[in-house]
Structure formats: structure tokens, C-alpha cells
Length: 510
Ligand SMILES: Cc1cc2nc3c(=O)[nH]c(=O)nc-3n(C[C@H](O)[C@H](O)[C@H](O)COP(=O)(O)OP(=O)(O)OC[C@H]3O[C@@H](n4cnc5c(N)ncnc54)[C@H](O)[C@@H]3O)c2cc1C
Image (tube, rainbow, N blue to C red):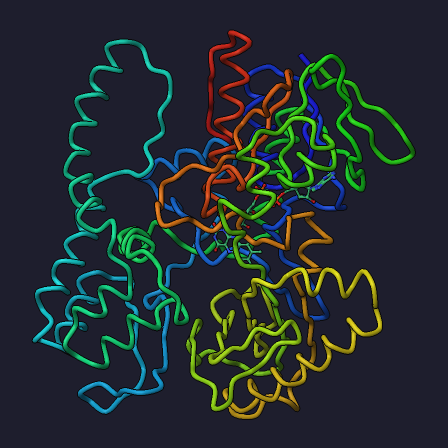
């Protein structure tokens, strides 16, 4: 059976690997000249800049995600860096009892607990409770890989799943807790402000903090040395080794259908590629409303298009700098308040700056030099996308104007880097949209709603269309690489099941 896949992002490559493993003949059609989609890095002069991965869930043995990664790449070929401090925040209004204004989010849970209680013994009770929730989470493998198992093994798994009741209990206890509601419970003003500022002043479910910390502590959410592109490239290598074929520089224009079934792909030069099954592993909006011309949607998908159900995840304005200085002593990831709000040309006003210093990845710059990234998240991606489309000169001017302001602020923060600045690069939501087609330049699909685990109305199949599947980070709010790989794996399993092929997997190694 022949399957044509649109998109060589992580979801498309993953689905391709599993389908090849199970005897299907697949070909991927990718608009860009390289694999990875949003999971990318790029080189300018001496420097590599990363546009994606800060950490990968399941980077070490013992989690379901590790098992999944080993099925699509040889994990032994990768080395991971685990940070001792996840984030460092300079506060605006408070200092701690030692007169310091910096809050450290340690990745070792014991150290974090000790640090928090030392700063505020009077808050021991709520601190201990949140630390306990991290410890409980560590006992569970989330989300478990649910393979189809023979009956006896299924029963055993069922019994093991009863253990998840404890997790459920804690989940329900914390369900409505956010960093803001937690901060309100704290007596200490320094800690209160620290928790409020954890997500740059946004209110976020405490799950978003406790789940990753429970994994960081285990050193199973590391950063892959070499960055996002080399990570994606390794999955591409596995796919090619499994016999897959990729057509780069081949944007798909339309998915041709006949009598309610997907038939073929129309690509550039009006070439048509027929297949028994079409799998789109790209943007949901492009797939539903451009490639399929809005013919295979339901009310829920229409509501999504009208932005009535879920919110699109933030897009990003990424400033990347190559600095001829050794910045080894600077925090790798920090946020600090600005004296004056910084107003983006798209109208978003920022009160802080987030700086990512890649001083822990030796492949990113030669000895004595450092790649530095400043990121500003925006919900007004359309401003940049429309401006670039309609007025390229103004687009360039606005970029320069904003970039100059950011360089001034960074120069102040890092103690004079202007004369050492060798490369300055700026990617806007229009850049992310142009290269990957993600709707509104979204970096991770949908923002999770108040109900963290609510699924996306974008399903693996579209209403009324046969021989067609869809997988990408748009399938599950929150997105990210683990979701991209899980959706790619899940959709391959569904295709196997529908074709009565027992789903089998094996580890990738040399
Ligand atoms: C700045 C940033 C930071 C991030 N940080 C993290 C992180 O730390 N951890 C984490 O887990 N995730 C992170 N993510 C999110 C993660 O990168 C994405 O969720 C994930 O890569 C999405 O994969 P995907 O395959 O679903 O989609 P995509 O990456 O969008 O892949 C879709 C592919 O389809 C191709 N395509 C689109 N249209 C067409 C067409 N018409 N014809 C042919 N091909 C087409 C695109 O070029 C692309 O290659 C980050 C993302 C960004 C941008």
C-alpha cells in the first residue's frame, strides 16, 4: 500500500518511520529544503542559532517517551545537557531575606525544596505540598504508551493502571491550582512575586511547572547537544534507512479527492502524485481550508477557524546574536525587568526581557564566542505576516527599529557587547509562517485551555473523507515535540489497525 505524507516535520517523519517499519511504502513531500519543520536551527557566520528545543521529555531511560524516541532514532548517538538551574528571574519589587533580587528555579527537587523553605520557613506547608505533588508524579510514567497487548498482558496492565488512582487524586487536587493561586497562598513577598513571574506574568496551571520539574529532577528532560536541526536530521536518517523517500522543495498545493476519498497530491509544476492513502502532517488550517478547500470540516473545526473554541499558541519574535565573547559565567536562561516597557511594532508591550545564552552547547560557536537568543512572544502574528506580504520595505524597517532597541537593552544587561556583536538575526512570526506554514506563526499549535488535558477538535481523520489522515502538534493543545512524535506514532498505529497489519516497532541502531 502506498502512502503519501505531506510534511517532513517531526510528526511526518515519525509517522513515516513507523509506517515503513510496518511494511507500507511511503513518500514525504516537503516544501522546505531540509527536514524538521519548526524543530530547526540555522547557521550564520560562525554561529548556530536554535529555533526550538530547550528540553526533550524522555531524554533518559525509564519513560515511555524515551522508548518512543529509541524507536525513531538511535538515542545513544545523542548527548544531552541537563541544567542545574532551569530559570533565573530578577524581580522588580522584592528582595529575599539575603537582600538578593534573583529567584532560582532549581531542577533538583530536594535542592528546590530546601531553597524555598530557607527563604520562607513560614510557607513550608504550601511548599511541601507542591514538592510532594512532584514526587508523586515521578512515580508515574505519563502518558503511558498504550500498545495493543494480548489479553493477559492487558489485564496486568489494567491492574498496574489502578496505581494511577493516586495520580488522579493529586491531579484533581491541583487541577485548579495556577502559579497565581499558589502565589496567593504564600506569605513571603519575594516568593509570591517569584511564582507570579514564573511565566512572564501569565497565569498558568501549576501542572505546567510540576510535571517538567518532576522529570528534570530525574535528568530525563535534557537539551540535545547540537540543537534542534541535528536532532531532526537524525530522525530523517532513520526514515531514509527504513526505505522512505523525501521530495524536498516540493510544496503541496492541493489534496485531490474523488467520491469522498483522498486520491492524490497536486504539487508544483502541476505534477500529481497518486496514493492509496494521504497523510497530512502539516498545519491544520492549510490542510482543512486550502488543500481540501473547506469541504471536509465539521462545526467544531469551523469554530476553531473563527477562533471561538481554542486560542492559537503564541508566535515568537526571535532575536539571535553572535557575540565574540566567552559568556560562560552568565546564566543560560534568565528574565529581568526593563526600566521602561518595550513596545513591539505589532503593539505588544513587554515589561521584561528573556535571554537565552547557549554557553552550554560547544557546537553553537567557536571557543571564546557565544550564541545568544532573545525571545518575545506575541499573539499578534498577523501584523508581521500581513506587513511582510503587503509592504516589504516597511517590514524591514520595523524589524531594524525593534532589533536596534533590543541590542541596546542586551548591551546594558551583558555589560557592553555592542562592539563584539558579529551577527544579528531576527525571525518574526512571518518567518516561522513562511518556512513552516503554521497558522498565525504558532510555535506549538493550540494553547492549552483551562482543561489541560482536553483534546483538540482536530482529529486524526476529517469528517466525510476516506483514505485520509492528519497528524501534527495541532492534534493536542500544548503541542511540542513529544506530541508531534506521539501523534505520528498514533496515526501509524491507526493505519495499521484499519489495514489489519499488527503494529510492530523496533529500536533504531547502527
Ligand atoms: C521558538 C520555538 C521553541 C520551541 N521549544 C520547544 C521545546 O523546548 N520543546 C518542545 O517539545 N517543543 C518546542 N517547540 C515546538 C515544536 O517545535 C513543535 O511543536 C513541533 O516541532 C511541531 O512538529 P510538527 O511535525 O507537528 O509540525 P511542523 O514542525 O510544523 O512540521 C510541518 C512540516 O510540514 C511542512 N509543510 C507545511 N506546509 C506544506 C506544504 N503545503 N507542502 C509540503 N510541506 C509542507 C513544513 O515545512 C514542516 O516541515 C518550539 C517551537 C518553537 C518555534
